[in-house]
Image (tube, rainbow, N blue to C red):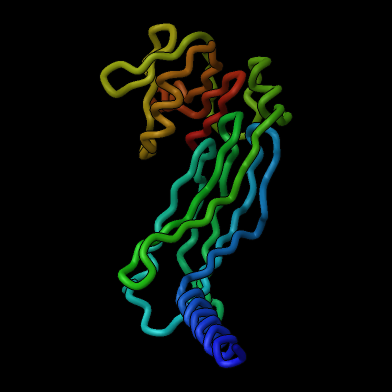
Length: 215
C-alpha cells in the first residue's frame, strides 16, 4: 500500500514540475492599470510590459506582438524599449472616444506556446467638460486655427464625411476601420468642428456617445 502511495506521489510530483516548467515558458503581459473607468473624451497614458520568461524566444521582433482596441482612439504610440533583460515596455496615449465597455488588448502567437493575450477593460460613462462644451456648440480647445461648426446627421459619401452639404477632409489621418464604422453607423446628431481656411479639414466630431479628434 505504501509503495502504491509512493508511486502516485512521485507521478504527481513529476506532472507538477512539468506544469510549472511549461507555465514558465509563457510570456507575461501586464498593464499599468487593472481596469479603467472614466468619462467620454478623457485622455491618458496606458503602459504595457512584456516579460519574456523563457530563453530562445521564437518571436524575432517585438512587432510580432499585436494590439487591438475598442471605444478608444490611439493619439500617440511609443516604440518598444527593453527596460531590463527580457522585459519590454510600450506606451500609448489614448482618448476614450465612445461610451460603453471598451478595451485595449495585446496578443501574440508563437510556435512554442501558441496564442496568448491579455486585455485591459475600459468603461466609459458620463461626459467630460470638453464633451459638455462641444455639445453646447463651443469648440473646447484653444487651438490657433479658424474653427467653423456644423450640427446635424453626418454621412459618408465617396470617402468623405458630409454634413449639411459641407464636405469635410481628413488631412494626413489614417482613420482605423472600426472608428470609421462607428461614425458612419452613428444615428444621432453630431457637432462637427472644422478648419474652413484649410479646405474644411475635419478637427472634431462629437455626439451624445462619441468623441473623435483629428488634429
